[in-house]
Amino acid sequence: MYERRWGLTLLCSLLILVLGTGLTWISLLKEDSSVEKRGQVSLSTGETAVIEPPDVPADLLTDVIRLTLTSDVRCSLSVSWLGRERTHLTRGLAILGLAAYESFTITLGEPAEVRVTLVEADGGRAVIRYIYMVLGRRMPYLYLAIPGAVLCLLGLGLLAMSFMRFLMKRNRGPNAHGAEEACRN
Image (cartoon, rainbow, N blue to C red; front, side, top):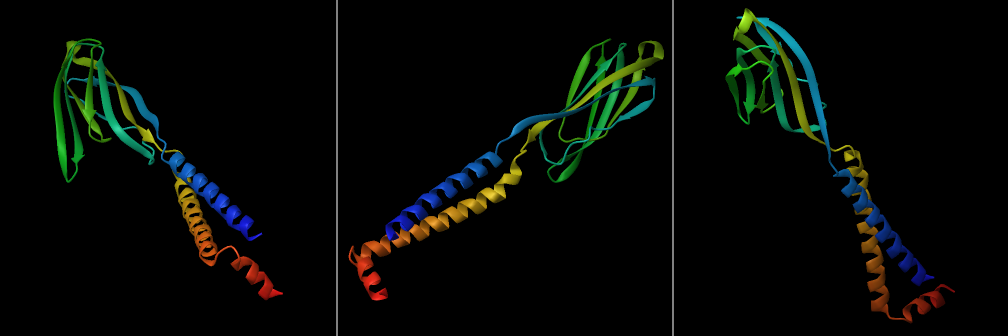
């Protein structure tokens, strides 16, 4: 019976360890995700519009943030935004000359309000269409990391116990188990 318990403990510890490792590995899987906001603003020469970023979920690790602007007429735009570069704020400013229905994409460092001012346009008025896109990765199974780690630790503990039992049996020799049973009777 002692042999069976040692083998059963070893088998259970290995199964629990494999299960915990599998759960931990699954928790690290990432999937691509994106959030976008589309809209349009109608501006006269000298007017400014503020384009708000899309609502970004807290679990989205952002990789690329882009704002694409398209105008219905030939125009010049002044585009500005505030960004954050590690330890300090930065200001971005671009003067764009767009042909009718031409697109221009601005890459941003983080989701931020963007101010678009119409400097000049054919006819004095322009409709600016925009797509504010945030591309990133999500880890939807991250909640499995803690149970996986607990199972790994439990499996390692059981593995250590079964290995210690094996070493104790080996040091006592094959007749030691029979002698223990004789003493109990």
